[in-house]
Length: 112
Length: 112
Image 1: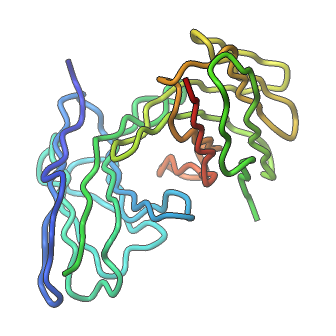
Image 2: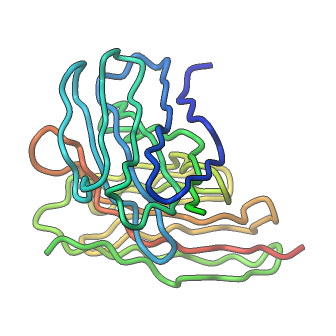
């Protein structure tokens, strides 16, 4: 079955370190997204990419970076510039207007 | 400002006790109203999309309805496996980013 694979499921980062979250899809979807989910807040858009080699900032892009070298892959790097990185990170792809997003299972990042 | 508000924040039901979750929206022209289910530690799963007032969709014990100002997710004779957080979202919004505006969710617990 097609889907989105996020890895790792849990990630621990020391302050001052950069970490990269993996997102791979085999749905053949063009558009991919990174969202951040915090308790008491709705899903917030970090970055999105409509096509390979192109991506755009979302609402909370500061302290994050992405790349889209292949259609299937959209990794997210959380840099040391992100002051409050502890959160649940969700990768998604857009199917169509009838079905909306398909989400991965998420990566929980904790700063230690 | 476009906004999506869900109520209640949390709901506890006994198995078999039917109820409804509310999602109200204030947007300048509804594009689509999405319902997702999210289990703890997992990504949201698509349930329904509604487009116009009066529209209804059903899936097993769930039925989603839409008016001009709000959507309801009716849960008939719920079972413990229906326990989850239910998210609603409106969109996609202007441009090609297909961004959705998300509510904070209703956490549903169904006791056996």
